[in-house]
Length: 260
Image (tube, rainbow, N blue to C red; front, side):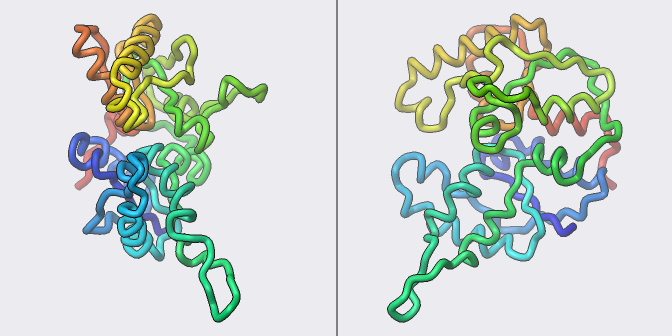
C-alpha cells in the first residue's frame, strides 16, 4: 500500500508535533508512507474567503505532487473534506473535446484518494491491536467536517445507529478513559473565516463548548482537527480554564517507540 502523507500548512507551521505523530504512528503500523517535498496549502482558506480562483493553482499542484499514491493521508478533517469534495468542482468535471463535452476524471483522480488519518486507520488499515499508552480522562470533540462530511461519527440530528470511529481507535490506547460532552457534535464556533467575521458569536460558541468538555471531568480534549482544538485552547487560556488539548494522533502515538 503506497501511501502519501499530506501535512496541511497550519499543522506544519503551528502544530508540527501532530505531523510527526502521524508519521510515527503510520510507520509503527507498518505503513509504507512517503512525505513528498514541496507541499503547500490545499487552498481552503482562499476558497472559504470567496477567492476560489486563487485556490485552483494549489489544487493543481496537489494533484500533481500526490499522483501515483494509493492513498493520501492527512491529519485534518477540514482539509481532507475540502480537497475530496471541492477539487472536482474547482478543477472542472468536464473538458471540451472537438465539439463535444466529456467528463475528465483524471483532473481530480488524486484528490479522490485523500483520506483523513482516522478514516484510514479505522476503515482501511482496520487497526485492532493495542497502540500507545495515555492514562488520562479525555473528552472527545467531534469536529463538524468529520461528522457531516467524512462520516467519522453519527450526526445527532439523524435517526441512525450511533457510531464513532475516533472513539473506536482511542479504545485501543492503554489506560485512557474516553467521555463525550453534552451536545457531542455541536460546533465549537471556529469555522475558519466565521471566527474572523463573526468574532463575538464564535467566541461564545467556543466558551459554551469548552465548558461542556470541562463538565465531563476530563483532563484533555481531543479531536481530529487542530483548528477546532486551537480555537478551544485559545478560549480556555483566555478564560483561565484548566484543561488541555491534544490531536487524536498524538494520543494514539503516545508511548510508542520513536523512529530510528
